[in-house]
Amino acid sequence: SNPTIRITDNAVWNSGSSGTHGTLEWFTTDASTNAARVISYIKSENDAGSAVPNGYLTFATARGGGDNEVAQERMRIDASGNVGIGTTSPSSKLEIFNSSVSGNTQLHIHNDKSGDAAVLKLEGKRSSINDTGQVLFANNSNLVAKIDARSAGDDGELRFFTSPSGSGSTLTQRMAISSSGNIQVGSTQILDQSRNLTNIGTGNFGGKVTIS
Image (cartoon, rainbow, N blue to C red; front, side):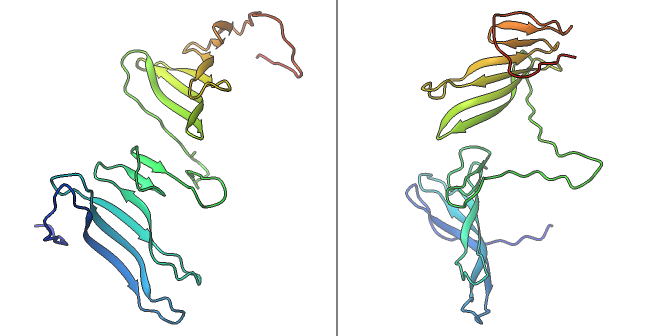
């Protein structure tokens, strides 16, 4: 049989119970700078509200460098499998939240090989024309813009949306590129696959427009 390390919890849990099932922790005894403390741990905890015990995992670390910081939670995997970094209540498969550290919050995908690229892949499984991937932009809980891809199989088209001032999270399609390469702005096609520009009104251009 496969070797197993088991931490057994003998407590009796009920629907109102919450607490810790068990902890695996790393402790340093180095007291040269009053640094003896738990520097990291993995903890299994129980959510209140379930008649049957469940488990979520918390991962904690502590900074050094004179901070003498007590280990703090950095990541959580909840009972349904959602992963939260910087949040204790992730609402999706992965949620990264930053409310305190200065600077932009970044998701960095780094390919350090000269012959390959870094790739972010969004994949759906549509069999009739519908959105198969979306990039949503939000500000202060309001959706402000979106780019989505639509497909019914191996075809693909792109749509671009923005949100007018005062519209809350209402997004309006502004432009689309069809699977055949036609470009549509608003409800009017302005550029077809033969690169013929259609006049849809009057306007001013401050630079040069090149269609090749």
